[in-house]
Length: 227
Image 1 (cartoon, helix red, strand yellow):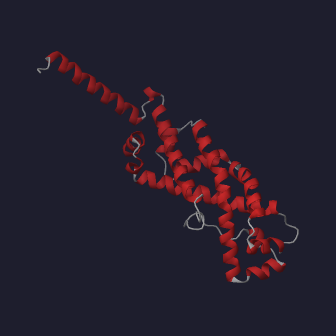
Image 2 (image 1 turned 90 degrees about the vertical axis):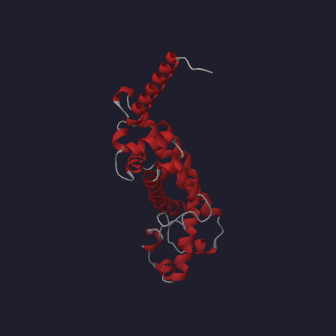
Image 3 (image 1 turned 45 degrees about the vertical axis):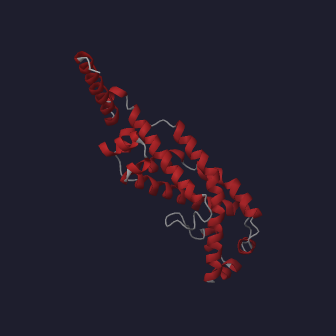
């Protein structure tokens, strides 16, 4: 079947026009009001968070992560008396550290939907600047916007996890703390877990920026390649 020359020209014009529009969207020109850049940033934060929480909520998630594993909180390490004696044993200290990292997984389960919901609904005034920022620019910005939201959300879940854990080392350590209740222990773990969560999200953001093709997300790939 022969192609009508006029139709061929029109088709080429349509393709070229569509390509120009796509390029405009990708470069985040002001003609689009920064919409595409904002969407790309939200996708970057969403994927980074999903990847981080998938790892941290898995069995051994905090303990197995080079950036998320945290040491015994100061609540324990800075106390005297019996707990100081217990922690003088390297074996006991490591067992306690491991168990607290296990407990933190429950906190991450509480934190995950809050982060993802925030990313979905948050207003981003300088999306272009954040996408063009350093390896963890978006994560750092989001953490600043959320403040202590994750810590507050994690404490109840961590309190429950500590209360029902039945771990003898954790139970012995808490019993050795004079005048400290489970809520205080949960708060101390939440503070450490909060740092760990944001560190892990930052690592995932850096990985996506370094290899956007791994996301299979055309808009995200285009944005990060352009910038």
